[in-house]
Image (cartoon, rainbow, N blue to C red; front, side, top):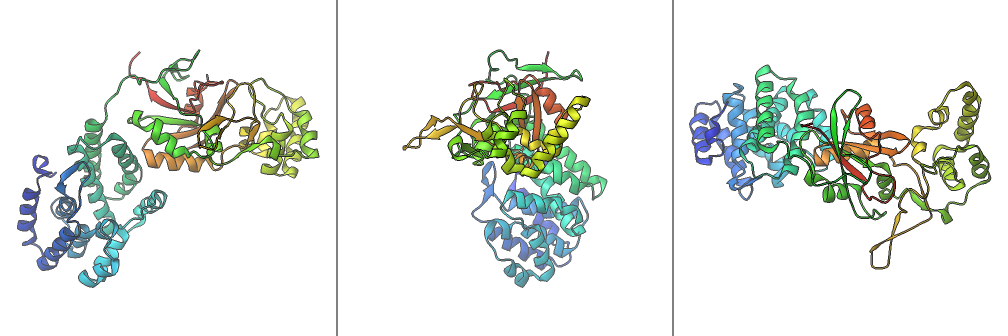
Length: 447
C-alpha cells in the first residue's frame, strides 16, 4: 500500500521514481520512457486536481507495478509509463514502436482504448483474455484511479459514478484473473471512493405524483422510495440520454436505479406516427374486432395501432398469434397472443384520455401539444438501458407501466427485473398529465 499522505505529492513521487529507477535493469530505457510521457502529458492535469500534473498518474502506476507487484520487466514498466500517451495526447503508435521497440508499442496499443463508450466497454470486457502484462498494467491503472478519486473529493459525483460503475463491473472481472493482493487493493480503494463520494443524500426534493406514495414495501419486506422526475413535454427532436442528464443524474447516488418510461424512449427514437399517415389495412380493421378494450390504454384496440403491430411483427405471425389466443382462451390460458407475436408488441399504444399527446414543435422550435399519434414500442430497449447506464453510472430499466401492471422491456446488466416490476406495481409515474417519465428508485434507509 503506498503512502497515501503523499499520494498527490508530485515532488515526493518524483523522488521515489528517481531513486527506484536506478536499481532496475534497463534504467536508461525507463528514464527515457518517463521523460517521453512527462513531455507528452505536459499540458494535462488530473481530474479534480487542476494544479496536479497528469504525469503523476502513469508514474504511480509504474511504481505500483515495481513495488507492490514485484514486476521488473522493463517493457511492462515502460508501457505503464506510456499507457495514456496515444489515447490522450495524440502520439502515434508508430512513434512508440520506433522509440521503445515493438513489444512496448504492442502493449501500449492494447492499453489504448477507443473514445466511444460502447466500444470502450467491448474492449474492457475482453480484458480477462488479454496477456498477463496488459492485465497487470490495467489493474494497476484502475487501482491508482480509484485511490486518486478517494483523495479528491472535488470530483463531481456524476463523473465518479460513471467511472466506478465500470470499475465495479468489468474492472472487478479483470481483477479476479489476478492474485488476491490486487483484488484486496481494488476492494479497499473502491470502498474509500464510496465513503468519500457516497453517503445518503436523504429524501430528494422530488415529490410523489398526486394520489401516489413515495415509499412502497416490496413483497420481500424491503422498502424502497420512488422519486418521479419531471421533465418538459418530450418531443421527437429530444434525445433520451440528454433528458436523463438534464433532469435526473444530479439526483442519483450509489445503488440507485433509474426507471424510464418506454413511451419517451419510443418518441425520441422516431417511433411515433400521426394517425393520418398510418392508413390501416383491411386486416387491421378485421383483427381489431377481437381485441379486448381496456380503460387503461388503447393498446391494439384501434385500427391504427393494429396496423403498426402488423408492420412490426408481420401479418402471418399476427394471424397465428390471434388464432392461438382464440383456441387457448376458453381453456383459461392467458398471454398466448403476446408469447407468439412478441412481448414488444404489448408496448404499442395510441392517443387516449389517460395520457398527454406527443409534443409537436411550432416554427420557432417551441414544443406544443400534438394529437392523433400512435406509437410502437422502443427499439432495442436492453441496448438503450445499457448505453444510458454506462454513460451515467447507475442501473437503468425501461418500463411500460400503467394501472394494469408493469412490463420491464429493457434493463442494464445485473438489474433484477422482478424487483423493478414490484417497485412500480402501483404506477408511481402516473397515468395522466404528470410529465414524469422517469423515476429514481432508492432503497429506503429509515422507516
